[in-house]
Image (cartoon, rainbow, N blue to C red; front, side, top):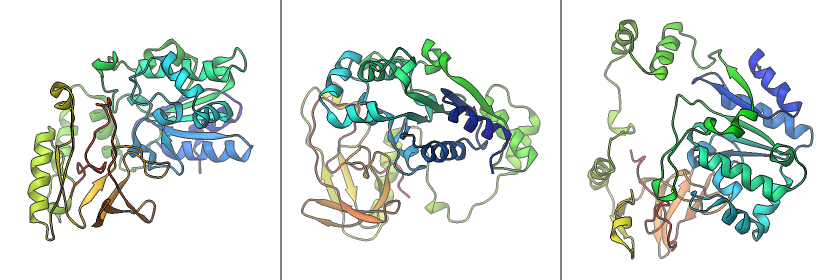
Length: 340
């Protein structure tokens, strides 16, 4: 059941308003998006759910990254270049012109530059009227106290928050305040204090310390590290311990070493059967960036990966591309950041 604030968001969406849906963790933002999608679709609207990251797309059915939907890709192109490329891309042009409602989740990770580029591209390609986005209804969702945009100096993107854009002020703001994921008031307050940052009071610190306890199966939990070198070192150690034949995949790189060294993936990737992997590039509508799976075997084309979310196995073959240093290339397009 929708609470009062969630219902207000649905009502505004059904009335055609452009919306910024915000709220801290646990307030039911994703659930509200799914309800928005259902109600709008029931009214005959063509609704596209997009996210700023591939992994966020896994929260929804038939979602894709905003970068793919809009054709802005990794942000390397100017707006006029994206418009020209999309005008020659029948699928992209059809998506932009036929969509009635565009939903963007994890909006905090979209920079001001890319947000303004999205507005420019949609406006230029729809050309329906003089309304904002030429009548395309925009619903964005996220928490700006969470993940911020990643600066990309090479593409002249400073990583400024998109709410700094004058275009963002055209959105009607709805704030969800009722936490529905947790019921413990002390836990809710502590999470809120930590998310706000700044000086944390002693009560919150004491509460968090009291949660410290031994955990079962720590070897099987996901580990977080500060640098890619530490990640790669840990992954290599764990995969060496795992039984089975070791397969090595080596990237074939050429070009300026300065840029090649900025790749965050290792040049050599080691895999064994049952090894967890995650895609780092959109390979198709179903095989998207962030999709997780595990290796079930190997053939001449590459490793065979079972994806639980798809309930199917795909062979991930070699892909060649040029000039794209922000999309990580490893022979086979997979990565092991989420290993073990």
